[in-house]
Length: 71
Image (cartoon, rainbow, N blue to C red; front, side, top):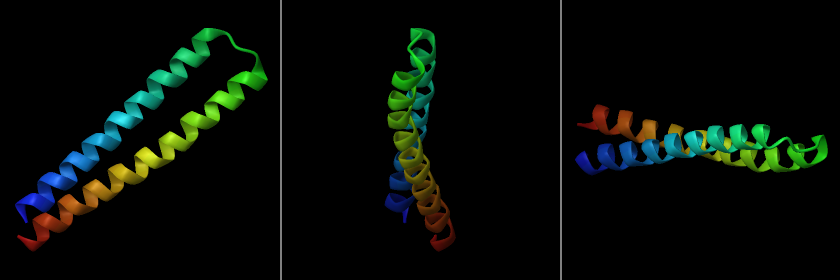
């Protein structure tokens, strides 16, 4: 069960890092002063990565909780 907890923690941490990347990416895009169409097209990348990061982080936290309960 220890591996399940640590693996889940690593997965959750990876998701959080991806969320931080999304925040920094969007801040750089907003400061770039792009036109509306280009900004929207590039923001779609951030939205997809954001949803994936939230999913990965959630799965990691679920593994941690399951590992703690099964201990």
